[in-house]
Figure 1 (cartoon, helix red, strand yellow):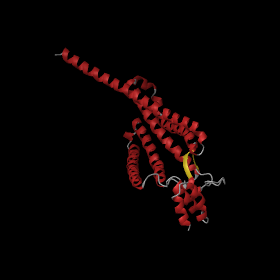
Figure 2 (tube, rainbow, N blue to C red):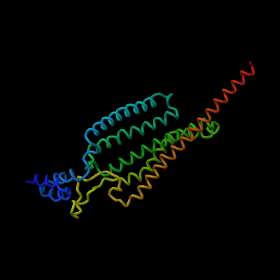
Figure 3 (cartoon, helix red, strand yellow):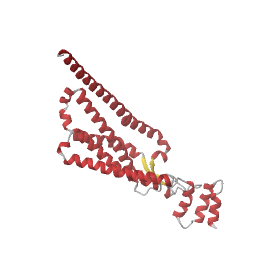
Figure 4 (spheres, rainbow, N blue to C red):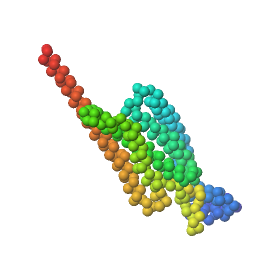
Length: 282
């Protein structure tokens, strides 16, 4: 009888309204089944993608994970064991490798898990904030590391005399790398604060009982739960896009363009002087 009523609801025009009434009646002894009855048809899909696409994406993630972990771990071990490899460039490379490893070992598993099971959020609430903090931090560290390395290359090639003045600064390479992490964490904290695990459905549909549906707990940006936070989140998003994408990208392009011009000029002068020398002694 109950199954027939639910089937009738699924075919009804107001399917979700009907299920909101019938599911508690049919599954009045099980809170889990009652919620599953409604969520299956009137909420997000349990899986983020269709099965065929999900299998392919998961296989790709596993391949990225294996290649990334093996490659970056090998990089770190080689840099650490061979003294000749302990140059400034290798230190920056190691920092990038560590950042990638953190992303692969922490961020990627969460992505796979969320693709297979979007709800309910199975971890303590603080893990949701930590996930956002790590994702934003590692991304910023990678960008800052590449930017600092580009600046150092520019100074070394285009202003070699000035490089002598900043030798004490260059010797503190670990301090510079530590700064990239501290600064990135500080900039990532607002993003962590604006993520949270919460119930998307605060009451059972059609009621105002203020008893959240436990199965509707998701880890998302806080805007999904409090739309009034949208202006703040937009400001954070624009800050991150400008500070950790637009400005570094533009700076790196300008620096390497100037490096290319300097190198091209030197090659031209060397070639031209060689031609003059040949003409003089011909």
